[in-house]
Picture 1 (cartoon, rainbow over the protein chains, first blue to last red):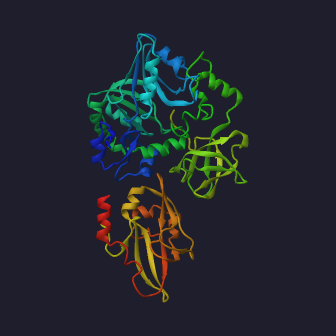
Picture 2: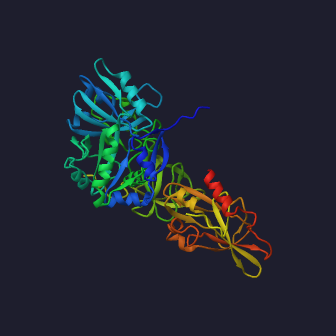
Picture 3: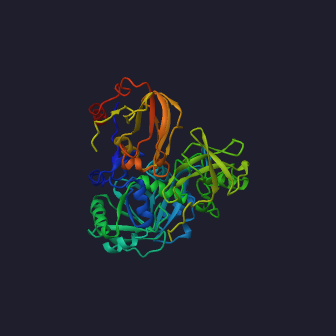
Length: 375
Length: 134
């Protein structure tokens, strides 16, 4: 048997010396939490100060050539014509009509529009290869799709003090939500600064060449020292995104879970002529989805976890938890769950989650669980 | 953190320490090790057994849940739950801060005053070797 060694970020050595606990994320060995930190402290740093994440496991790819943006727009769900150059958009790559699970989600991703002939895509680690492969197969002559996963590092600076940290480094931070600009970091590296994130706080994602990522990481930690910056792992990233009700592919979105079911229809350009899966999704939207993503908040003890059944007052299963965790902000269990439409569950209804055989009371709520501060 | 040599350990990463006798039984205090709390991360919820419950090795008697995962804990000895650490309901993070002291989980009364109910468990060196080897 051959052991496949996991891929590592260009910041791997820094994580090791910072005492990070590492775990496998889709074939990448990435930090879960740091020594002297922990999920709760790191989560709190992002909600109240600023945190620095290495998310270099995220994929990066470019689509370039005459008509590149129009080509992307004809494949992915969101309407790329709603944004202009220098803006980014959350979008979905769905399974094309005619294939099994048509309308299901291959991946969710961010599209950065540089211009009509140049789009940068940031998909998830696990699905980057498939998303870019599907686009490459479908690309018209003259449009080139390139996988740049290992060439580009992605750092996230997130929290109410993130702007201060960027300004201390001389990076441009005064840009609108979902906009991006290119600047020069403290160490002289070219950095694409994006007002994006996965935490619900004011924040930035920084794209930098992999071989300059170490310098940028060090410069950010040094610049942020006085405002209490803290390196944060993917454990806190998950509690932060769950508090916002943000979907995670493989949990709230998948080949089996369409954007209509996941209430991600806002990321679908319904007015567009066509996109991958458009027929299946229009049909499902018109008929109404058989299940929909809802939020649940524990009213007592117990923490919902993925795969747990959601029960009605009579103990009948009406759905399943897709993500769940302890909310460090609310100090209680929260979760996202797909509930059967036929069960007719209203917001505010009291249900239970089967926590290892013990039904624990939850209230159905509309995420986010805590207020968003992204704008 | 060093592994204290005043108590015994299990391969389930729990510790057991004789507290004394109450005349008819030997009281053994149990908790999870520093290695276990570190592996779990920030602990946010503890499910303790009922006082009076009869317990024996091999069956889960409670749960320790962190932001990331949940882990059962087991009775390392056969007996009756004599006391539980109720303070953990409001401050489960005490297990992270002081796993061998204030973060104890339960006291189990083992019938009989004679013998050493935890003598068969791992000593500190054996447990440390287990952790180092894992």
